[in-house]
Structures are given as structure tokens and as C-alpha cells.
Image 1: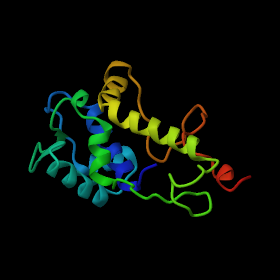
Image 2 (image 1 turned 180 degrees about the vertical axis):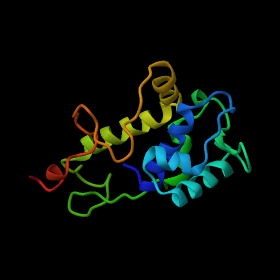
Image 3 (image 1 turned 90 degrees about the vertical axis):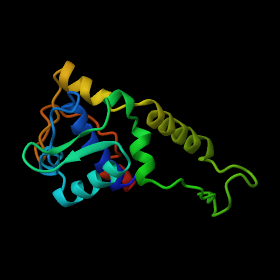
Image 4 (image 1 turned 45 degrees about the horizontal axis):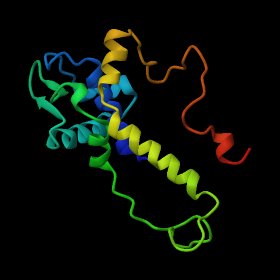
Length: 166
């Protein structure tokens, strides 16, 4: 649904949302990377892009770091998504290489458009405040990077054996 840069930018923003307190708490790129199991140079690059877009603010020196530029309930997932993803204006259809919208719809057309519509709705309606609420109000903590969760649950991503048809 979206690329690695978008996924990691959302992860970095979600960490900043978790600790949001009006901008008093600032996290370094190293702290964000460690909390999310990401590479620090990549996080630094993402934070630079997020800063340029006005989504985060950063300060250098002792006590410096990054914070969200405004309350997490005023920043939507689409704000981050649109920075790192291009609008897919491809009209290619998985049904024989034709053009979508020409001729009979492929057998997947309605399902694919439904999934796309749901994803668009999620991005437009969801704010980063869900992470602040989960962390600060509900006391939920993400599993530390590199550790397995206590309770097994199904991932929102298809398991590897399902991807290969197994």
C-alpha cells in the first residue's frame, strides 16, 4: 500500500506523538530510531523532510531534538503519506494488461477499488493523536525493537507463506 519511506516516517512521527507534551519533550533521531528499530541515518533524512514540510520542528545542541510542530490531533496520516508517495495515475489493469476503465472490468476491480477507498479513508481521517492517546492515556507500549510480542496476533500484512500461495 505504501513504501518504506512512508512506513518509517509514520513510525518516527508516531513516536513523537507518543511523547507529545506541547513541545517540551524533544527526541533525537537516535532515540527515535532506537525506539522503532530503524537506522539512524534514514530517520535523520526523514526528519529533515518532515521538518521542511512543517510537520516537526528540530533544535540543535543540548536539550535539542525533534517534536511535532503542532498537536498530534491536527496532523493526519495523509500529511505524511503525501510527502513520500506519488499519486498512482497508472491505468494498468491486472486483467491481461489492458487499461482500467476500458472494456469489461477485471475480476478484481471492485475488490481493489474497495481496498483503495478504505486506505484513502484511513489516511484522511486518522490523526497521530491515536498514538498519543494509546501511549499516554491508555498506557499501551510498543514492543521493543527486536523483541517478540508476548501474545501472538495476526499481522495486518499477509504472512510470507500466504504471499507465495502456500
